[in-house]
Each structure stands twice: as C-alpha cells, then as structure tokens.
Length: 130
Ligand SMILES: C=C(O[C@@H]1C=C(C(=O)O)C=C[C@H]1O)C(=O)O
Image (tube, rainbow, N blue to C red; front, side, top):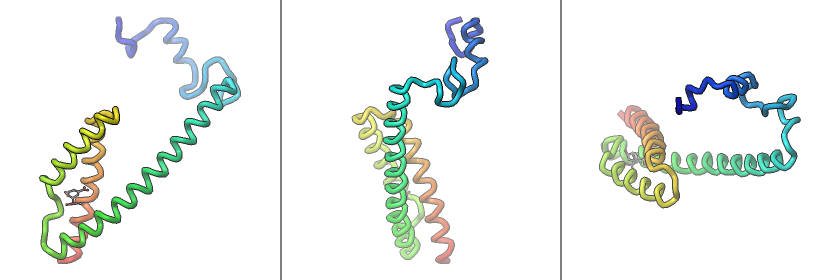
C-alpha cells in the first residue's frame, strides 16, 4: 500500500516504539540531539516565540479597535455583523496570503474565526446598551 499512514512495515512498527516527540536512538529529551541541530532548533524557536508575541500584541490592538466599532454600532443601532465588509476583507486577505505564500484557505479560516469573536463582542455590547 502506498499510503504511509497505513504503513505496517517493520521499519514503521519499529518507529512506533519510540516515545512520541522524543528523538529516536537516544536517552530521550534533548540529550541525544546533535548540538548543531539543537542550536538551529533553539534559534528557530526563539523567532517563533517572538512572532507569537507579535501576533498577540497585534490581535490585542485589533480588538481595541473592534470594541470601539462595537460601541459606535450600539450607539447608532447598527447591526453587529457587516457581511459585505467581511466579504471584502476575506477577498483581500486571500490575495495577500497568496502573494505571501500562505494557504489562502487557512487565512480565510483564521479571519472568520477572529470576526466571529468580534461579532460576539458586538452583540454583548449591543445587549448592554438596550
Ligand atoms: C469590526 C466590524 O464588525 C464586524 C467585524 C469585522 C472584523 O472583525 O473585521 C468585520 C465586519 C463586521 O462583521 C466592522 O463592521 O467593521
């Protein structure tokens, strides 16, 4: 069978005996890892941590803006969701994702996830204004 997910070869069975997440052939943890590989992993993980921090800060700023939009909408009896605006944002984000070599479907899912939370906030703000 060519589907490696269903591979029952001896090598595959051997790999399955290793603890998931641990380097094969060593004592486990980081002790068996080549120092050069360890250094690369550390460097990359430091960048990942910085990026994750930037994402959190950017999201926090975005939610500060959307909260203000929610207050404006509640004050002027506007609906929490604006599907036309969302469609334009999704089209734009998909294009940006493509040029950045990010999966556009993933970018769309992420934006929809964020927008759903924003709409929930706007509904809460509107409920409080009633
Ligand atoms: C923030 C707004 O409210 C909602 C949330 C959006 C968003 O998070 O980008 C976009 C459209 C609306 O459904 C808005 O109308 O601009």
